[in-house]
Image (cartoon, rainbow, N blue to C red; front, top):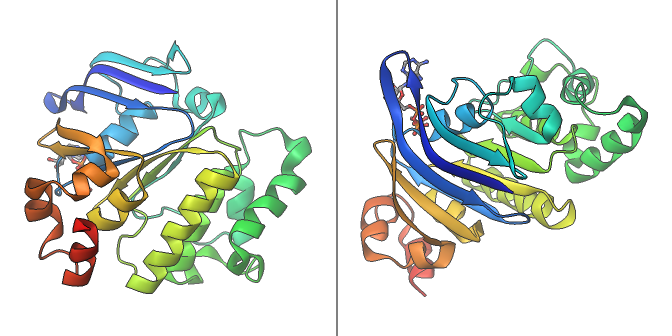
Amino acid sequence: MLKIRGLRSGYGRIEVLHDIDLDVPEGEIVSLIGANGAGKTTLLMTICGSPRAAAGEILFEGRDISRKQTFEIARAGIAHSPEGRRIFPRMSVLENLQMGAIVADPSHFGKDLERVLALFPRLKERLAQSGGTLSGGEQQMLAIARAMMSRPKLLLLDEPSLGLAPLVTKQLFENIAEINKAEKTTILLVEQNAFQALKLATRAHIMVNGRIELSGSGAELLNDPAVRAAYLEGARPQTEVGEAAR
Ligand code: ATP
């Protein structure tokens, strides 16, 4: 569904992504993990057209979108739930969801709202509440729900678990699995919670200093000694690391 070849991108004269090749096949959950500053957010933003790719190709369903405007990319079927949630804090939950539907056909708004609220029942009870007064976990649910209002074929999720308590994170990863399975939405997931991201992924990539250093299935990377040493041990409770090794 998404095929990236030889991608270079960055800010002004600073190149952050160096010659990235990456595939996101239809129906899969692909996880991208890496340390702070590796370039994960820059990759998701470049897919959405800002910053623009300096070189290389981003093919979405066979068409090169690397020169398209952000709204055209959204209309083509790619939705982005950005790092730090970026919901509209003074708008109500319902208004935030309406904003997410802006690129969608208005005739199926009611149906899409129902679908998204079934995924996140907590938001249903809070439709009139302003976004900024939601808890961190609820704001993250809203950011994902807003992205889902455009009926995306490909959902880009940037650090959904950032700053959330373990139980809330667990719930959120269940939601992400459900979106992939029930809604048949393909997902590219950027995470620092390497254990959860690898557990969920059909395939995964490790990004280091703007390059893909290692790729494999989620299970392969969970069991890779170098990955475990760098991203899992010490970062997650030992029971989870033990589970990863089995
Ligand atoms: P994190 O997990 O901390 O969000 P990341 O892997 O998502 O890290 P990016 O946010 O993509 O990394 O940042 C990659 C590099 O690009 C960093 O060195 C960062 O300082 C730089 N960078 C990010 N945004 C900008 C910007 N708007 N202008 C200039 N440099 C930027």
